[in-house]
Image 1 (cartoon, rainbow, N blue to C red):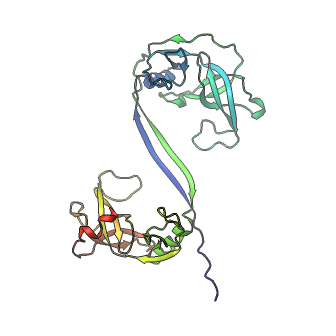
Image 2 (cartoon, one colour):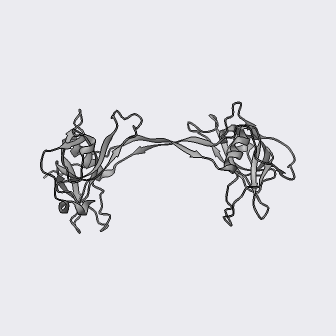
Image 3 (cartoon, rainbow, N blue to C red):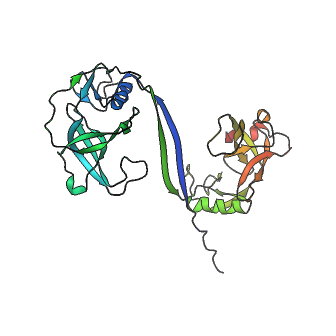
Length: 319
């Protein structure tokens, strides 16, 4: 008998991206506003060390820090690594060095880019200076990069009150991660089954729990799960949330309901959107069935089946 070849392992590019918004305390506000004004500020600890970038609490004693000082725009490279292929969004589009620079008057080093013609032009101990961005808004990118600069170190930092006109009080940083995702053999089989409008999990040979989507191994018993089990297609809403914020690039009107759904025969609940019912009528125990996407490759959402609600005791272990 000819053995069935394993399914092709799936791979796809995946981008995780979101704007990270945070407010600034007095120290960070002064630091970023200072960069906008071409001034680099650090903070002095109780032991006299000057930390750049500044922090609001001493990393050694947790004491609150507010003693701001101005340090130099020149400094010394303490260590470095060459970046031969810059990625989108990095400080420079041409090859450059990542450097840790101890600015004159500081006791700690600042990470940034060094514009250099090649790795042979970079060395630990070399002197550099800040190249300021032409347009500055109060962000670390106001330092466009560092560049080689032959100068003598500045001896002492100068006290600074941290006051500026129109201080920066908050920042928005775009967090982005690009990578290639492979679901592995277990979830590849699961996705291939979905394309056939079937939902397939895997049963643990030890505890007999059926995992949907399958994981390839039981996280409780630590043994491989190879016994495939078809579950559903119907299931029970175990718990849910009402979503009121519209996601970028998602063509779904808010509010809508996202739920944990325990498919019949499964040992744990999976995620799914609930449709075909007003959001305020979704409830725990609601019996639902899948509505498949236009191409039939996955359930677009789940809708009520019209059956009586499931008894709480039948799904309480799956909450």
